[in-house]
Structures are given as structure tokens and as C-alpha cells.
Length: 248
Image 1 (spheres, helix red, strand yellow):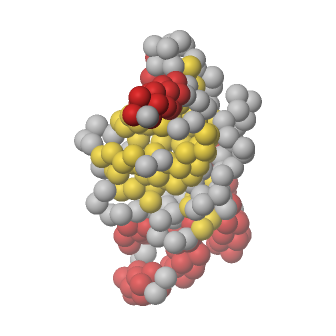
Image 2: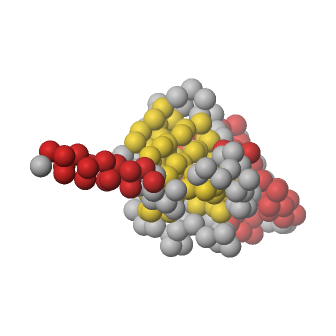
């Protein structure tokens, strides 16, 4: 009987390892992070995380700022059996698949021969988008931030943000700038620095304050909202903004 159990366990282990998958993630942003893939959790000082012996299929990946506790990324990825999935997480919280390598058939990592292009995944609270990894599937998905706000925009690309900023500066009236900026913020996730740059285009403090309040929900690095202080002519308006933020 013991021999039968041992044989069964050996077969089970062999099958499990035969279909084991790997996930390698590089976080391209400053700080230290706690990264989880399935039931494995890691933290280190080099911001590259390697997970082995994962079950193939839908795998939850979660990245948390070690010091602030903010959820930087949380989503489900489909990691096929016997495959090494390689990904990068950018400063805006977007995860990009850079390679999908069959284990044993490539050098692996970022230098692997199995590079299949890029697939972008945004964050989301619980759902799973796109039915998993596909070679022809690309795009950025809705974002979820750990402080509780939900925004259906995507992170603003620096190149296109610069173009949008130029279009705001070309407007003749603050009212038009404010309207256009609010529409933009409703579709995009912005950094505090980008929100500050937009605030600087307004002529009047009252419009800067209106904008700063409206854009707060779209800011993915709210801890840096203090950057907007220098855009206000009157300190009372910045104090008003602080009071607004304190109750959000």
C-alpha cells in the first residue's frame, strides 16, 4: 500500500513539474515593492522578481509599495503551462508582456528567443481581461488604485500629454482650458506633476483650484499632490485644496 501511495505521489509530482510555469517581473519605478504571483510573495532591493513552479492558467499578480502600502498593480494574467512569461511594470502601473518562452526551448528572461511583442495590462480590482495572453492582443485596460478610487482612463503618454498641454496653452480663455482639461482627466490617469503642469496654464487661481479638485480622482500618485502648491498665487487657495483632499 505504501508503495502505491509513493508511486502516486511521484507521478503527481512529475505531472506538476512537467506543467510548471514561471513568471519574471521587472518593476521600472523607484521604491521597494512586495510582489505576489499566485500564492508566492517576494520582496527585494533590485526590483526584479522571479517565480517558479506556478500552476499554468489564470494567475493573480499583485504589486504593492512596501512603504506606503499602495497597490501599484493587481490583475489576473494567463500564464500557459510549461511557459516562462516575462513582463515589465512601468511607472504608470501598466504591465507589459515582453516575452513568452517555452521552458527548455529558449535562454529565457529578456534575452529569450520567444519574444512575441508587447501586451499591455492595466490594473483592475478583481476581474480578468482579454481571456488571457494572445500574440495579437494589445491595449491598455482600466486601472485600479489601492487607495480606493476607480478610474476608467489610461495613463497619459508623455508625448501625447505634451501635445495636449500645448493645445491648452493655445486656448484664449481659462474657461475653455478648464473644460478641456476636465474632459482629458476623465479619460486619463495623470501624475501629480502632469496635473501641476496643466494647472500652470490657467490665468486665475480660482480656475487652478477648480482644476486641482476635479483632477484629484485621476491622480495615480496622490502623495505627490503637494507639487501643486507652487502653482497657486495665493496660499489660501492651496489651503482650500488641502481641506478638500482631507475629506476625500
